[in-house]
Every structure is written in structure tokens, then in C-alpha cells.
Image (cartoon, rainbow, N blue to C red; front, side, top):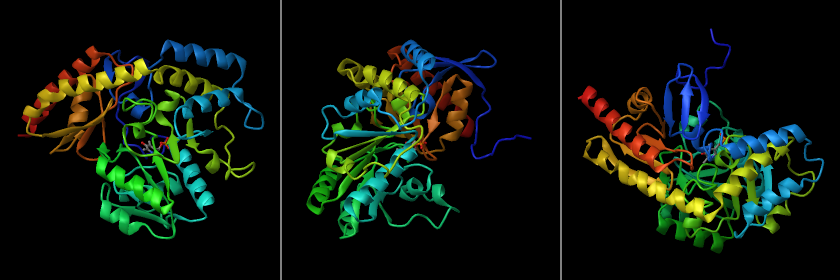
Amino acid sequence: MSALFQNYARRSLHIVKGEGTIVWDDQGKSYLDFTSGIAVVSLGHSHPKMVSAIQAQAENLWHISNLFESPAQETLAADLVKDTSLSRALFCNSGAEANEAAIKLARKATGKHVIITFEQSFHGRTTGAMAATGQDKVKEGFGPLMPEFRTIPFNDQDALKEAIDENTAAVMLEVIQGEGGVNPIDPDFAATLQQLCESNGLLLIIDEVQTGIGRTGSRYAFEQTSLKPDIVTLAKGLGGGFPVGAILGSEALADHFGPGTHGSTYGGNPLAVTAAQTVVDHVFEEVFLEEVRKKGAYLREQLASLFGLSSVTCVRGQGLMLGIVLSTDAAPIVKKAEENGLLLVPAGPNVIRLLPPLTVSYEECRQAAAVLEKTMMQVEYTVS
Ligand SMILES: *Cc1c(COP(=O)(O)O)cnc(C)c1O
């Protein structure tokens, strides 16, 4: 009997090693990893720069807590907010924790308590982030939920206008809903949302936990929209595999988190900041981001051959965050792809997500698309 809680539907694969986009199981079989640990391993597995940075830091200092000034956090914070309208960062350890901080900050800064969120959104598993999440399956059995989240249909301008009242503190959203099925924001809706936030004095919280740090081909996904966030939350790709999260905010907002108001023992510890700084130094280079955009476009082109299959509805997403929308269940395809040496992650019941490391090669994109096509033909043949 397992000594573990059984809260994950784990696959039986035992992965023991990774390098770049490739991982190996304990039988020595290799796989193309198009999950990257759910959009986390941004520079691929065991990137030499990540390994040497972590090794050097581990020999020097692991942890001191936030009792002391941290020049390393200062540098990373400055890099994260550079050329944005935001001016400060606060570090934590995960996406849910970043969203908790955003929720607390929005309430404290506005003195109001209602936060509008969207159906199919995902903001994390802690009580506040869970209450913000627009998916019943995440919340079932855990009530009473933290109150004052108003969840409305995504990309619905009328619902948004109707939901705003004098108690609304903020609107919180993902620019491309990740777990909910790779659903991008509609540009018209984004424009209306921005305008309504400004005219009603609402804070705009953008959850970039999945889309941030180069995943969509820009530093942050909001940079490809008309949205001007007041708060941005980060995690997943930020640490490249080391657990670290952050919120970014304007100076005026940050002033509401004075000494003693909020904090974390681990948040931004030396190992985490070293990992994140190494990721950011790479990913925020314009040439790197341009490659992400080109590789994303190339991967999309390679997937075009799937449109001959009856089960494929469309491909959506941006950069190296793509979703293949199916008219059938994603699970049998994900399972068969694994047998064929390609690791994938579903998003909801009928979307296959492609989230390779941002360092994936063109050749690996071509191979993954070929394996996927073969897999989908095999699965279609079996079911019909
Ligand atoms: C994964 C995810 C979270 C939760 O992050 P954790 O690190 O698992 O707490 C929050 N928001 C979005 C958009 C995510 O994709």
C-alpha cells in the first residue's frame, strides 16, 4: 500500500533523468517532454547554466530568511519590473501563494472586498486562490468558500458590466486560461475590461503564473494585449524548476504592504533567487523571446497536418503554450503518446496542451508533431 495521499492521478512512469527537452525513465527509455513539468522547466532539464548557478549558490548560502536585506532579490525585482508600468516585486514560493498575496493586497489597497474572476479560470489550491478559481471541480467539498468572489463567463462584456458595483475591488484573470483549456482573452473584451477598470477605479490583477516569463513569446503575456495590470502574479516558469513565485505591483500599491503586513519565511531565498535570476537573464533577451515566437509558429505549422483528423477542432494559444482542441477525450491520446515517447498534459477533458521547454529545438518540435499525428491516427483507428 502506498504511504502517499492519493490526490494525484499519477502516471506509472518513473522518470529518473532529464536533459534539455528529453527525459529518461528507469528502463532507459527516452521521451520528448512537452509538459516541462507543467510550464515550469523553462530552460529545459538540467540546463548547464542552471546547474552551475545552483551549485555555486549551494556552496555559499542556502537560506537566511527575509530578516536581512537581499541585494540578489533587489536585482531580480528590478529585472522583473523593467520597462513595465510596475515598480516593485515581492517573492513567495508558488502560484497559489502569489495569488493569495494579490488578493490580500487588492483588499487592503482598495478597502473593498469583491474580486471578479472568470469561469474556467485556475488560480490555485489554497483557500483564497481556490475561491477565485472558476471551476466547480476544484472547490467541491471544501466550503464554505472564502466569500466575495464573483465568477462570470470569460470574454463576456455584458456580464462584466453587470458584475461591477461599488463593492468591486478588482478583476483577476489569466490572459490565456491554462488549466481551463488554453482559452485566450478576446482583444475586444480586453479593451473593454481595461476601460472599465480605469473608469471604475478597479485594480486589474493578471495571473501570469503559467503565461509569464517568456512562455507566450513575450516576457509577460499581457504585453501582447491592451491590458495594463496593477498587479501581476508569477511562479511556474520563473524558477525553471526551483519553487519560487512573485507578485509585481506599482509603488503606490506596494506601500499598502508595509513592514509586518505580509511575508514568507522562504520567499525569495538565495537558492530560489539564483535559479530565477538565471532564467530571467536568458529569457528576457529579445533574441530568446523572438525564438520562442518563431518556434511556436513552427510548431503550429507542423500541427497543421492534424487537421485532416476528424477529432481535431482547432489549435489555439500563443508562443510555446498551445492547445489542441478535440471533439473527443484527450486522455487516451495523452496515454498513447506516452507509449510513443512523447509526454503531454491535458487541459480540461478535451484539450491537449503543448508546453515544451522554451529551449526546445525546431527538430524536436517537428518530431513531437510527427509522434502526435501517428498517435492520433492510432487512437482514432482504435475507437472507430
Ligand atoms: C498552476 C497555476 C496556479 C497555481 O500555481 P501553484 O504553484 O501550483 O500554486 C495559479 N494560476 C495559474 C494560472 C496556474 O497555471
